Length: 430
Image 1: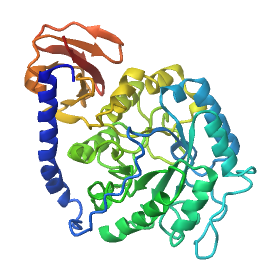
Image 2: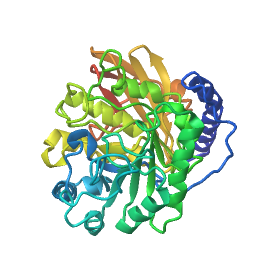
Image 3: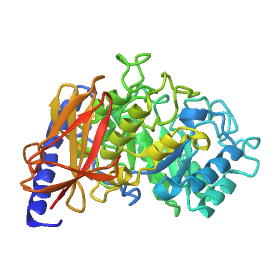
Image 4: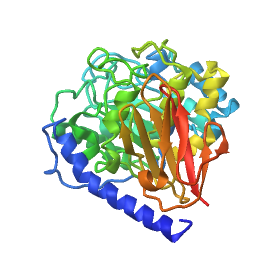
């Protein structure tokens, strides 16, 4: 902290977050009747993902149409276009790498030799040689969401196999196999794989994917997960009426779903608002949605960053236009996501379509997002003393998309925010 006032402000903020834990728990009770206070407290921790994981995932754009060539080209592109150096180090295979469809009771879990003729370890070794990491996918059922063999009953065997391949990240997906199961059953299914991974010498980040059902944020950290989905799949939409197909959440839906979950995020354990849709432009092979505008995609990226969600992009990085690449590699915005304090921004002001989100950062500054959910331009005002509780008489305000400091009157900052835009600021005490 840069001053006594900064330290006191941070202490006060942390106390607020602790108090919010009670509120958030009460708010989520209605989402699932299976409260899990009866579970033994395990407090497993693999010591990984102290900042939200950043990288690429194959599912949104490619579905099961994945192979060695795609992975190698994706790695090479992310090195060449600056994404790796911006922090995107994970390249994650989703469902479809497996050889067999059908139940694990009938088929083994192996990689598809036609898609990966040199094996998964070859791809992992190549990723590591380029300063990147490789992720893979499985699930706790006898088969996966795409119908391939799963890991049920073979957790130790599969964890050892993944480790031998050099895998660095596992997306463990229970949304299809355990959709109707109670919390204790789902929790034990993830626990089996988590303990199996902890037994390996290889460090493997665990993504617990259960679509936010059974209040997974209440127990995900305890069983050693590094991030967990807070909702069902994201659609390629910024603001779509209701939920597409009574399932998919758009960008604003996801933000609303996570707004009360701030107490559950901390270094190594993250609320996951789902993969980034930036640059999909309505052509995803797997997601519904007509796409979003460049401004809406940029707002989506800004909000995921300040909310400390993992940043796993799902677009075809080999075909990014300049604007989309600039969005994904804005170092100043990414820094809010990767800040060492590991806090999720809290909504500090709500005036209908106009919302302000904010969080303190490890250097004593504050990150602020001015979000205009509406479709028309509006003037938004930030009063850092009233809205953030900062007793600062003079500040520097930096616009992180303009990459420049902006003038303020010493009391507040007023700015026009167009429809579906988020202005992202860093507030620094002078």
